[in-house]
Length: 168
Image (cartoon, rainbow, N blue to C red):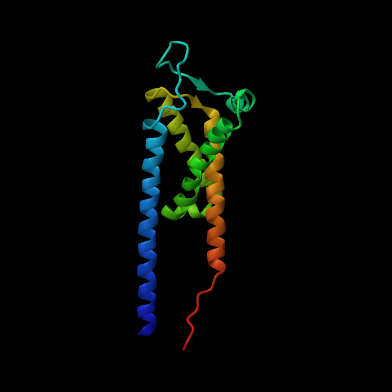
């Protein structure tokens, strides 16, 4: 009887943590959509036709190079480059926790992160005055990869930790 109670408590605790992590994942997705599509217009494109012109970059590493070479200080490149990576680390970390089949493959989660980044960049081009940039997709995908590697490490560590009850 004692074991059944303990199993039930452990099951209830896992379900509670799962609900919290699902909430965090969906809150993250909402924040991601807000930041990339509705928030400040830091990456605004004036384009060739003035305000509101559509602008894009399809040449990999072009804007990364330009940011690195032409920025007067190191602060802007760090904010832009590291920011794009950090923006998708939570996706790579939380997606495998929220969606069970993503736990099996680092590649599938990383590709899903890339596809979401492509959808965001496409939306920025079509619906906002921001630059759609392949470099953002590359950096976002790298961030998703970092996140999924971190969660895989956490799953591995968790599988190696044995919990035991100490009898008094």
